[in-house]
Length: 343
Image 1 (spheres, rainbow, N blue to C red):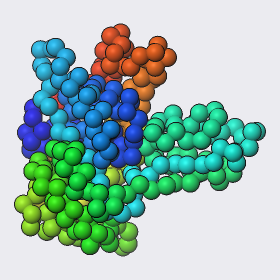
Image 2: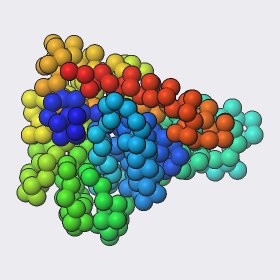
Image 3: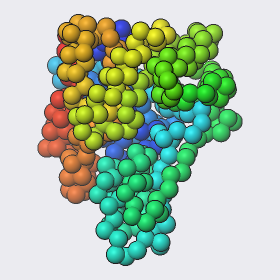
């Protein structure tokens, strides 16, 4: 099923590699395995090296022989109209880290970006933020990474993605409009423009958030752009536990009657429990397809493959190069993806 067909029928699955993730080897492995598993879109950082790694992985997945070859997934790059937790990296000065520290930051890091010695491996950190509150000395800080206005159009023209996702926050309508103009200045014919908007606070957050989305929709409509609305229930928390899946579904339930036209895509805390919960909420599998256009997997998608990626590394090779390991990785990826592809 091609990406547009998947969106229209509620079978859409997107892989989120991370808006600030620059682990090139890991990204190539993830993109290869999840392309082969059948995802419809792969979302990566707006970085030339990252996009090149993603394209290598996608090419590998499409080249594998099989009875049901996957359709090419869209390559999407993520941008932000301001500070955003998806566009950050953790940092601390290892010289200030006491030698007696048990380094709880290392234990909670899902990207294995903190070793037993030294600081944060910037290329591996994708900004989940789990290390920030656990440091007993308060040494870890977050450092945002937002492109300047002048960088956007030439970078997109160079990368040539199929789609773009803009991360925004309530109250940043003008900043969103400016960033959108910079995106359009690239002159590229995007398949879709996804919008990930933070949850508004107040007495009626659903109504306030819907107003923010309608404001963004009016801008997209002026430029004849077709949106995807990404609903981040629990941003960057998909590998914490099954309970996080409820947050994304609650957000979907609250916004479905109020949202502007365009498919609503679940994200933030999505995992293997999301689809069964969605079907229970909707009452049937058919109704579930009408309720949500699809799902995006980030932390959960990576955590399923991380042990095998490490095992391949210990063997001195890449996961996609290890004929005994990548089929196991594909089985794990399919457990997450295939239920969404089924009728």
